[in-house]
Image (cartoon, rainbow over all chains, first blue to last red; front, side):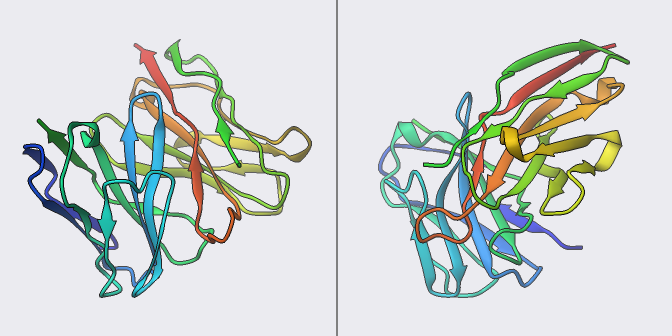
Length: 112
Length: 116
């Protein structure tokens, strides 16, 4: 089954404790993105990747890092999480730059 | 900068009522347009998309949308809603954005509640 998976689905952590949210897709897509969803703000792009080792900032990259060492994986790293990073995070992938994006199930992160 | 506006933030309808959700975007060039739906507690799913051709596109679950280039609009419609359509609906536009090639810009979403 074609899908995008994310782990963990729920995470509660404390300020400053480094964490990684994993994202993996099995559709051989080149393009992957991370979004955060906040009430009243819709989805905002954090980072995206056009291929292995090629990443770039989206609209809200501060406080986040990403890496793309393999085509299927695109982890999101929060080196020192802060409460304003409490949000719902979605990973997405697509086969073409402007095509349909397939979304993962989301990771609800709470930073206290 | 490109932007997407969804004018209805919260819509409440009774079952069998007709639905129209507005979406306007600001980019003047070629765009790809999408409507996504997010059911409670779930991830985003594609309802329908427009790339080119017939400006009236049909999606899943009886939804359709009309692209009106002169109005920069891509409104979502459904003739008769059901309780199961209760969800949040997002309009999105994919357009060139600076040097990026994969910029999907979302509206802020419309929360639809259908009362039985």
